[in-house]
Every structure is written in structure tokens, then in C-alpha cells.
Image 1 (spheres, protein in one colour):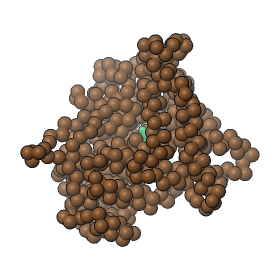
Image 2 (cartoon, helix red, strand yellow; image 1 turned 90 degrees about the horizontal axis):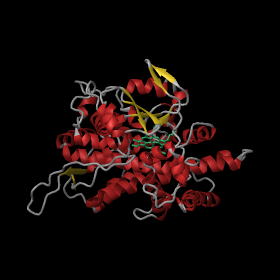
Image 3 (cartoon, helix red, strand yellow; image 1 turned 135 degrees about the vertical axis):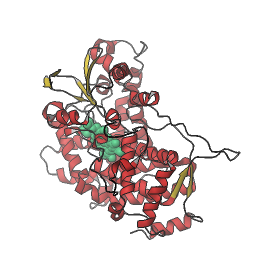
Length: 474
Ligand code: HEM
């Protein structure tokens, strides 16, 4: 339980006493300084409020630090509900809806195959390889930009700008500043206000992060008008619009948000999966046996195999459930006062859909701390209808990238399982190094570094043979 509580602590550190005091409740109200906060711990209530009454719960809270760093007017995920946000969602829908997401599959598989090569060559760098994969997929989809395998200059720029902001965007700082905005006028040496130093010069960095990849796509379009990416497709679609300048500005924000929303979440999910495979070898064996029964040893799995691999599907769902990477979701906000089952929810309240508690619902998931994919299968190995939707949020603010994310994560899981075996690393005496899983804390929560041994499943698989399999991939 201690580990679990530290996990949900995420960056909502000030919420912890309230959550621990009343973590049994399906809906909890507390005050962070002068800010009302409603935490929803049940999927049903989250759907009742955030979906059925989405007209009232699709706003985001005013986060003073976001405003200070210039993010609220740019980042679609943090933006208040309204016309600009709607335009962002329209752009996303055009490029990322389920039917459009199908077109990225070849690109996603190509990048996963690059990951396999990297993992074979330097398995000890598996985290770095996975991060590079996630960054590369989203940069390609968004800007049509092919990243360098490691140390790509544009990815580094985007990462630096995002990291700086995330350090400052702690909800505790925001709650204090939202309650007492006059604190913002105190000097940056004042205790707790050091982020004001970070904010200085930030708008220029943000501007560079938005403009550089965008200008890259524009220059590519000038030399090859047929090129296709989220940005080029949107630009083509709006080129005759009377409000072109306004739409172009919004679209730059749409594109810039993609990287921060997609990269860390996708990478973390795959790292959680590898950790689970190290800790649960029987699960790994069963998934690999299933893959071997469907996929010929001389080829790599493809998306057509997906329906024949229910256990792999269950592993994917269990990865989302076991460790939801955004455990407290992104906060919604209530627009007006509301009454739900006799409870008063004040207008302006921060509303948190607590995916962590939903994933720990013992009525649905026995032994919730354990990684048990079988919980998604019936006695005759048919998948049930629990797709763990709460991992991607609720209502009108639900994750726009969930179809792309699903394909990347599935392709990653199935390909890694087909080619590699993940086990505990051994020390110089040949003894297994025990893995005591720990998680780092933030808006997203990922495993702390852990030792892991990765080797090809088939003896004699070298880079040449792997390339041969990749070249034969259909
Ligand atoms: C495994 C990977 C991912 C997970 C677990 C995840 C999870 C989430 C969650 C929990 C939210 C908040 C939903 C809410 O407020 O109710 C969200 C929002 C969002 N996600 Fe994802 N996400 C993932 C991948 C992606 C990808 C690949 C993209 C691609 C662009 C993306 C783009 C977004 C955007 C733009 C939002 C903000 C939506 C809005 O506020 O209207 N995400 N995501």
C-alpha cells in the first residue's frame, strides 16, 4: 500500500492527506488552500459527470503557472474550454481519429523495427531506445520529420522546453498562486517562487520550439507539395480560409502539443511493459507461446495478426491498468454549480478523474497490484469488454491520440515479445539482481531505472538476420 500511495502521489502532493484519509470514497471533496477539488474514484461517476454532463465538466482549471509560461494559450491539453480549444480538437480529429490513424501503421511498424535493431545492438540502453522511438513516431506523424536515431537536435529542443515547464507546473505551486495571486508579484528569491526565474526568457524558447519544426514542414512542402503529415495536411486544408493567420497560429499549437502529450506517455507505457515482463516471466512465456502459434518464426508480427493474439491484447490492457501512466488524469473543471446524488459540486471546482483508484477497484480486479492479463479473458480465452478506457481520460477532453497510442504500444509489445526475452540481470557472480520496482513522480509516472537482461529469443539472431526479417516484412 505504501508504494501504491507514493505512486498516486504523483505531483499532487498536497492532495495526499485527503486521498489517504478517505480513499474508500467514490467521490471526495477537499480544499487545496482556497481551491475546491473533487476527486472521482469510480468509473461510473466519472462517466455520469464527465461524459453525460460533459457540457459542465469539459473545462480545465486556471493554472497560474501555465499562464506565466505562455502555455495556456498554446497547449490544447491545458487550454480552457471554448472556441480555440474546439478548433484544436477539429485539427486533431482530422489527423488522429481512428480511421485516419490507420494510415500511420506502416510508419509506426518501421520505427518499431528500428527499435528492434537498436535493442539488439545495445540492449542496456533500452530506455533511451524507447524514448527515441516515441519521439520519432510523433515527430514523423506531426511534422513529417525523420529524427536522427539519438540526439536529434529538434527532439532535444522540444524536450528541453517541455522539461523546464514541467518542473514549474507543480499543482501545489499553482494551487497556492491561484489562491493568492499577489504572490506572483513578489521577487523570485522569495521562497517557493524560484520558477519565476525559469519563466524569464521562456517565451523565446517556446516560440523556437513551435516555429522550428513548423518551418521544417513548410520548407519540405515547398520542395514536395505531395508530402503528408498532420501539419502539411492541415495547412493544405486551411490555405484558402479567410481567417488563415488565426488558424495557422492555432495549428502551430496543435502540433506543438502533440509531442508533449504523446512522447512521454507512449514511452512510459512500453517501459512499464518491460518491467512487467521481467517481474512476471510466466506471463511473458504465455504471450510468446501465443505469438509462436500464430506467427511463423521467420517473420515479424504485423497488424493483421492482432485479432489472433488475445493474450497479447490482454497484456496490453493489463499494462495500462497495472500502472496508468497519468494516474490522476489531467484535471477537468466544473463550469457551474451542480448537484450529483445529493452532493454539491461548486462551479470552478477542479475535478480529478482518479484513474489510479479505478485501476485498483477490487470488485473488478482481484489482487490489483499484481500483473494478471488473464483478468481480461473468459474461461475460454475470449477477451472481455474492459478495454481500460479510463487510462485515456473521459468525455470531451478524452485523449485525442488514443488510437495512435494504441497502435504504437501494441506494435511495440508484440514485436519486442516476438524477438526478445526479458529477464532479471545477473551480477558478476551470476546471481540474479532482484528488482524492487520504484516509480518516479510527476504528472506522468514512470518506473525508476531497473536492471534488466535482454537477449534475442532465437539463438544466432544477429543484426544481419534481423534486417533480413525486417526487409521481408509485409
Ligand atoms: C499511452 C499513451 C497515452 C496515454 C496513456 C494518454 C493519456 C491521456 C490522458 C489521461 C489525457 C487526459 C484526458 C482527460 O482530460 O480526461 C490525455 C489527453 C490528451 N492526449 Fe493523450 N495519452 C497518450 C498518448 C497520446 C498521443 C499519442 C497523443 C497524440 C497527439 C496524445 C494527445 C493528447 C492530447 C492533445 C490531450 C488533451 C486533450 C484535451 O484536453 O482536449 N496522447 N491523454
